[in-house]
Amino acid sequence: MWYSARTICVLLLGLALSASVHAQELRIGYVDMKEVLDNAPQVLAGRAKLDLEFRARNDSIEMDEMRADALEIRLQQADMTPENRLQVERDLRELRRNVIRRKEDLRDELSFRRTEEVQQLEDQINIAVQEIAQRNGFDLIISSPVIYANPDLDITNLILEQLEVEFAADQLELGTR
Image (cartoon, rainbow, N blue to C red; front, side):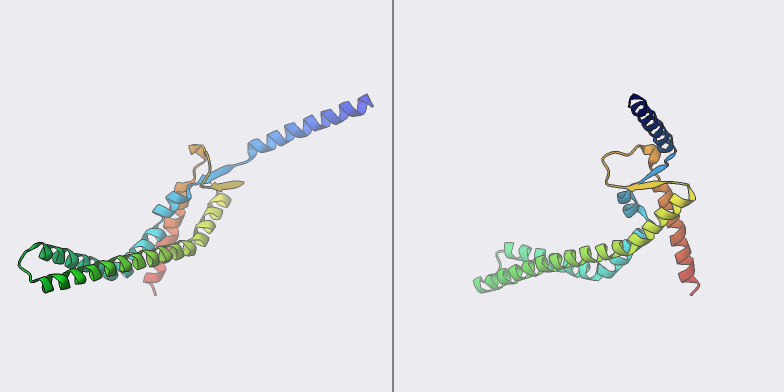
């Protein structure tokens, strides 16, 4: 009985040491997804596209805000009849409500479109991470958010470089069509 218990302990110790050796060979990388989503050329191009798409609506809202400011200045002047003053106050209230509503609509739609753009890029980002992991012999890639990652594990720049190469290739392909 004593012999078999000792044998089992030796086997368990051997397995633990073996697992420890294998754990030291494990290659782990970390990707800061916030940085990728802030700096990937695909994301920056998507932002520029959205800016262009929503610019006319935003400019229109800004013009209405300037009109409202002009109406406020006009109200401060004492050269209006009471009826005229009442009409300008109504116009100002209606214009302000309209601006607020349009701003909220624009903000909601822009948020929705940004989410759409990021979701379209998620697959491309995941593929880039997998390619870098396989090419560089990583066993495990962890993405943010994490509580802590040693900066030596950070491969975010490799991912960004891969995405830049893919973006340049996509742009070249679009240019040749």
